[in-house]
Image (cartoon, rainbow, N blue to C red; front, side, top):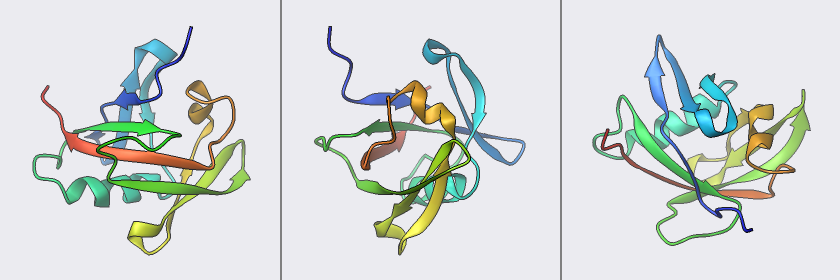
Length: 118
């Protein structure tokens, strides 16, 4: 059985924090913190209709439609720091929830952001 190469979550702003739910992996109101919220907020802000919530597709492999990628920098506190070169190297920390999707922190994560339909 092969895993999906592209994963999908639907981040949204709640009480000033960017969070997402993914019942399939046991996450509810999981926050993006330590710069990851800012990086995703800026990237989403470039796309009409993504001000309050958006769909985020991500993969450890390039895929058609990916708009940008982030690259692994270093591990810290059971999470991993990534940099977005499209945002002048802005850094964000992805918490251990990353390991619900990947066995280890990928060297690159490829991202596509689009407006949510729900």
